[in-house]
Image (spheres, rainbow, N blue to C red):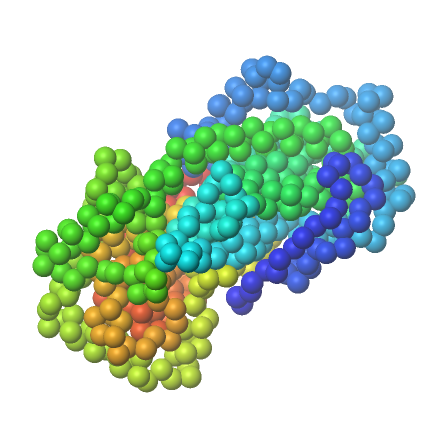
Length: 536
């Protein structure tokens, strides 16, 4: 079931341990049952790192234990006066809980990983708005240094959103693995297990509480989202505070558990923020001379180059998110694919724009444009995922969330599932955008102006279909995670792919080749997952 998570503006206190909250605007439309993990995954610290050049367990241990000042110290004994005072504070808080605070506890009880994924999808939808043209016909570019300007930063288009989903998910996963290491190292029981007067207001487990994994998740998520969506910094910060408060009020964590977890989460986020600042995203837009060079190359090869069909003509969407042919550096860094992998797996050329085969493909597109049945139109609308939505990568996150929820995964295993999915979607964006701008192929309506599309025409070249590549990669990863549902995932991917042909914005070659390309891209992530130790 596809949903758009509504905008949420929070007014809770920023304080970590405030007992009274004036939050009245939390949207509970996406309900989650309280999480009772099927398995605590006590060995998660041993699962392989996503990117050993960014973070390994040894590196985070070094950061925690050798930094000055230290990130956090070993916990005080549960018999100490300091810890007993923390327990007293929890009991005082529980005696004064309001209905609004109980709603906050309930909201976060369904699992922080799932909740942050919902929040991220909502942010993407809200910021997925292309800049409007100025009076002179030019388009302003969002500025990360001035995120509240017009247009707001970011424009969360499909490549940007794929990158955002991946960074948040991967950082959460690595942070939770680090939390699992320290939780089982110190093995401090949760407050509700240390004091019978403290109620457990969420399902109890045997997970140790120091550092609080909820606070770890809060810390890593807030720092990554502040980087990716700086215009929403206040809302993000308030959400993170709510999660930490929920852990305290529910009897899961004490103040020292939470302080240590917050510090650990932020330390992990810093490693991924460094990666993000140097991953090539800053050069993904390119310049006018570079855009012209792409068109000139297509003309040199005897092809009709892609042009923007918007009025006024809009600059191409992130032409150098994939590999750059006109510059000296590569495109945005992938997770599981190397630059050579992307080149080696790049699809062979589409039909020439002057060929009989292309003429036949245009005629097929025109047929679907002229005979858009009710059933095909519903498929077009189902998979449109255009402006103001959470984009195709978000659509697949939404699909995945229901299976992750129903599997009752532990927080660390849920984070792994989203990390695998979103690494594949990010790599699909890099590989697809490389292909699009390598061939610079025109859209059907450019070759035949009589074609009336059933959905908006994206502002980038046709070959290959982004929806198809995203869907192929996502279905491949989800089929690995939930093999009993493989037929469903593959059918959804095929339907998403065909929706672009039915909507008359892609040729059959675009969607068929894109789907296979996406499956290949997803295979790189699955190959990693099969040997990362989580299935042992």
